[in-house]
Amino acid sequence: MKDITLTREDIVRLCERIEGAQTRAYAIPKLTDEYPAMTMDDGYAVQTALRQRFIAQGHKLVGWKAGLTSKAKMKQMGVEVPSIGFLTDKMAVPENSTISVSELVHPRVECEIAFVTSQDLEGPNCTAEQVLAATDYVLPAIEIIDSRFQKFSFDLQSVIADNGSSARFVGGGRPRYAADLDLRTLGVVMEKNGEIVEMGAGAAVMNNPAEAVAMLVNILHQLGETLPKGSFVMSGGITAAIAVAPGDYISARFQELGSVSVSFT
Ligand code: 0L1
Ligand code: MG
Image 1: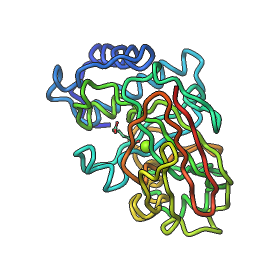
Image 2: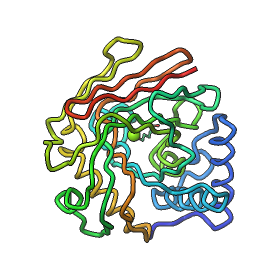
Image 3: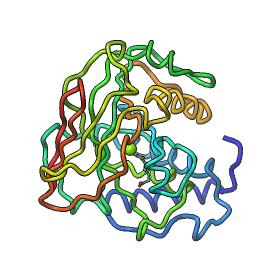
Image 4: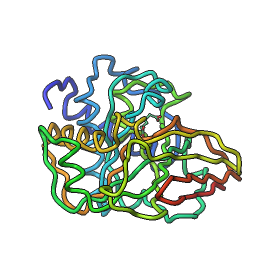
């Protein structure tokens, strides 16, 4: 990472601020209110400090997520560049489980195609073809994102520091070999309380979700990291994110991959 404006003390301070907001579920102002010169690299420096802090507390890194990878999401959030975040075992929830909204700030859900890798992947020039060759299987997933910023007022630097709004994720359905599918034309329908609220196809994610995973591997290279085999990787929301409240039931029905669902209380 090259473009760092924050001091080590600033990074620790912002990491502690994000950790407090995430673990105790309260909203904070976007970080650029206090640090207007903050860059995306600064955001990743805070995110890296957060990852290291959680790992030191015993959380296990299980994979990564690409975020803001569809035009729908970029438009919804007013940004033009994708981002990545880390996933830990503490964020994983079983299929069909119930999540308490009181543990979250602004919960919203996204339908995503997840990849599980069987070979290590490394940037800087990782391609979608290499991702597909290194993929064990793909499966349907719902990501529960939770921006910790007040009134959803944020920018990319702040979102990256907040680990791309990562909160929870649910994998399920029927895992399939990626080689047996065309991920671009794979359709998904998201239902909220039995009503269709969003629909789309894999191509909404950078023309092919495997491209988003390659992008993620290349950003990891900039962070000095690689993607080890056995990683769980979320390739990004196919549709816009949908807000959820207590009592909501979300089901994502994927062509070829079955469905995955989650409830909120
Ligand atoms: O998963 C993602 O697409 C990241 C979204 C980050 C911004 C938001 O909270 O919507
Ligand atoms: Mg997402």
